[in-house]
Length: 224
Ligand SMILES: [Cu+2]
Image (cartoon, rainbow, N blue to C red; front, side, top):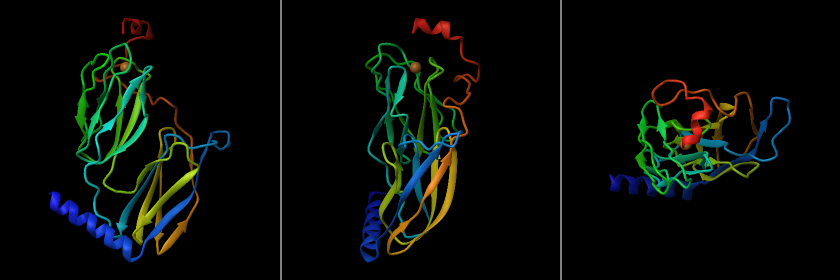
């Protein structure tokens, strides 16, 4: 396993040395009224090889998604299959994290201030994270096999460089815009482009609690 991963990395290094390319350009997120957001936040860019010599990414370093002020921080993150994700609770109240996403189902149970339950994500795809105590908490974890994956927080566009020449699927996603995809052909040198997403979804997607039922009314929240 380790050997094939190392061999994959050296193949990637070789491919990059032979003829490195890249992809870059602005990304715009349009509000429903047509205005463009000043900077990107929570937007994910994935460049997936369709016909290019790119090995799968191995497990990434352990990831940490904190609970602070009844929010998950960061709200959007990226990991590869086999990565451990911890959930440090920096609040003074109980929290929970659960996912009912097919292939990455889990439930941490309630965890106290200072606790940091850990789960391992296994299947590629978008994992939606919720707290069974607080309806308003949501977070999103993209589990990916491509080494070319970015959260575009604080940027105005995307940049992947170096990238082996070939054909790729560029996927852009945002919690309130959903996903769009494009086919991008990478040659030697930088391939320029411009891409955009339209906001069409609410900031908090309607969802049930971990039992598949409606959340208790907010008044019950004060006990936590
Ligand atoms: Cu919570």
